[in-house]
Length: 122
Image 1 (cartoon, rainbow, N blue to C red):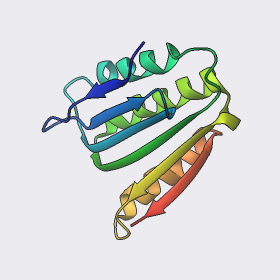
Image 2 (cartoon, helix red, strand yellow):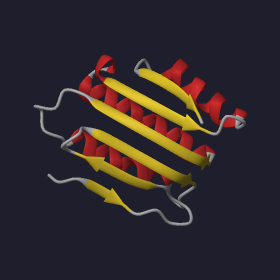
Image 3 (tube, rainbow, N blue to C red):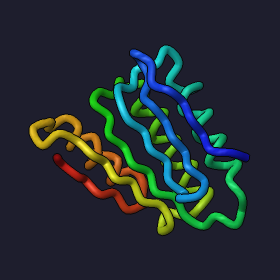
């Protein structure tokens, strides 16, 4: 298994899964035509990581996320928790300091999943 690299498109974010650092970076806008297919491919990469991996750090800087992407992204977070245990997962949710919707989205995730979520305005 290798690193996961998905280049951004006008509708989907860039995704970089780096095995050496056990990090998953997602950056850009997220309103792909088929959000479930897009995020399930990322979840499949996470699930396929070697059993010797015991944690994952997810770094997100998403400017816009459609409602279908929200649901699929949440499924990705749940896949991470199932693979590593919630105590071994961290989501760094980066957002513009004046973007109340993005902040609320990160806060909503923290009410649904049990992994540690850092809300990081910039």
